[in-house]
Length: 495
Length: 131
Image (cartoon, rainbow over all chains, first blue to last red; front, side, top):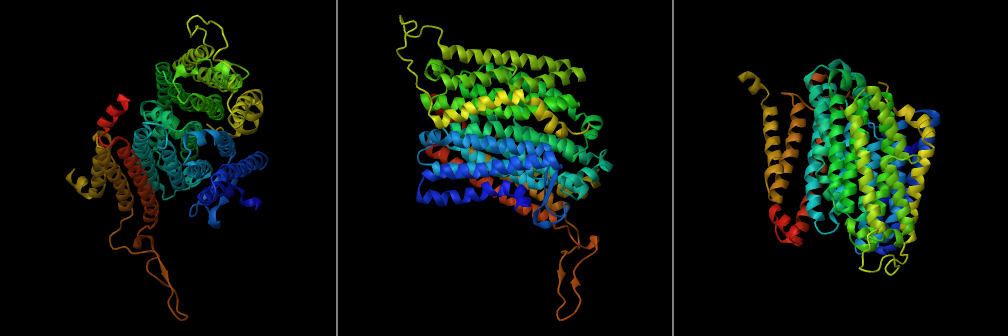
């Protein structure tokens, strides 16, 4: 049983997902607890795997006992193990958080919401754990299809946003599939470790160049890198709050993980750094994404849409950090995957509470929130400080490594973009805080009256996960050295 | 040059189909046309995979039992004599994915039609803007 844990991480949510509608036939209520049970088991298995990897090195699991080049292999190394814990713990948090929000927004679809929710998590975990390129494609599509379904049931306009997401997502996935095709033509293998060994003899061939181009273009669509991010703001703004809290932090981060995997575990670093100008292009793509995301975020008047553009900018941080191609920046980029996943889920859970309480998500709906919901907004301030990058929150440390990496690589434009985006984040969040405090007297003569501002806090099932995320942000910041020296130092590819 | 085009005609066809699909997905304003374009695009990739494993005069790599106590009869053991079955198998999976995507896309199109009573993107955007 213990030896089967890597498999169980994927199989548990899958089987629980298929049993969920059966439970739903009987009663709607237990589906929520069923989802939490599944994701708790998943989280325990992932944390156990993480410790096993820290103590004993990478785990290789052969499906059906077939040896790697012929069968599919699950490989868990430090990078995967960290991603597994991020995915399973964040999805568990969002599942706990989702109860009241789903009951309010989708009263007659609770059963199917949790079924698709579990399938979505299955896809995420599968993408992260697999060591096989084609298997990764299948899981990518499982995750995307579940994501389309979750987005489509949102508010007015969600179906059209979802349709555009389907079109863009399919193009991304197809490009990835084509990229794999070219790799398969030249190596005859789909196993990542095997391709890593065989391919170097062909690095000068045009087929490999095509493969790299298609893979990265496909992943760029999936991770919403700036010029091809157009599907993201619409889809995540209009999705139900619980769905956007699940997908927004994880889908982009997982695509970034796949990008790191492809660049450094399928190809050798020498290909993308020395032979092809991939990393140089990535730094500039990162700069454009940071600037584009930050400027577009400034222009928004909708809270969730603004958060979406912050996600777009954060993707730029990580792409740029990987593109700088030195160990420090890489450390920063991988730490930022962890931090940004936690920060984004924090932002979207707060946005979900605002939607739950006010029914809308314009910035103007944040009026008086600090008086009505002091605890929620305290959590929001912690997350905001983390996005801005104020120590001791976790956002500071990854930005520090990224900036340090930019200095080592002497890439001043990227450094400038990072600082610019931090300043923009200050403006963005202080705008929300200003509206939330309502410094301007809103109702004629009443200047500071408590007439409309009785405490009206979010329900505990939403509040506790949100506060837990805020605490996690501070704890990750305080213990960042432990995380880096035990996990990330091993996850950084040898350049 | 002519030789180059003719000898790789299968790849040219796949590129052509892919571009047709891509154009339909990007430029057409009708949602069903977009879905058809998406399907052509995905089929082009399937053709690409299948045509990489085509071999003239090749057979399947299957061992057969020779009957009572006889040796196994192999159709083809030598690499040159059998067609690589793996791309076909991969494409079976890809077709399943394609059908699933098509199903979700059509379902969403139905949702859109029920809500806005049209499948033209421009008209839906106008309806959305109006409130």
